[in-house]
Image (cartoon, rainbow, N blue to C red; front, side, top):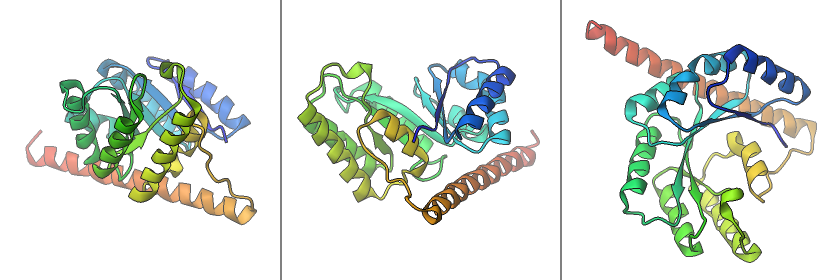
Length: 238
């Protein structure tokens, strides 16, 4: 399973959409991964987000490089972002201002986005395993989906410690009953964890039906939220 399409910040919408179409024709794109390091890049993606939501079926996942305010989160959701992620330094003190700022932003996002649509990726360079495991449990307790990825920032890692961390992450997901299906392509791509693939035509059709139901539910929820905001503006004479 490799249905992830990485979208950089500041790309020209029409040209990018054509490139995405070419990729989607070769293999369906299941997850559009936007890397948005600054608030300006969030605003600049609005047109492309609209084109993707109108013409394609994959979920839109945005990894923000800043702690957004409520208005920015509302904007991100109403413009078509389905899943939102912030990185948290797993080695940092949980009570430190940078971590608390990001946790506050994640909790704001949790109240705007659908259930389990908000995640935190734990950076683990220099972090001890027990501390990372405790962070996973705390995020899940707050109804924020914990993620842990293998990337260039990890440095040299011990295979046994890596296995224990990802085993704990999987157990954490199971205990919390998180919804992982929209993020399955990313999990396969960035972690050693495997996602069950349907072995029969019926199983494949059921999986597609579940994806369609999740997308439809997310789109309906977004539409209702936009209407409530518009109605509040109208009642205020704005």
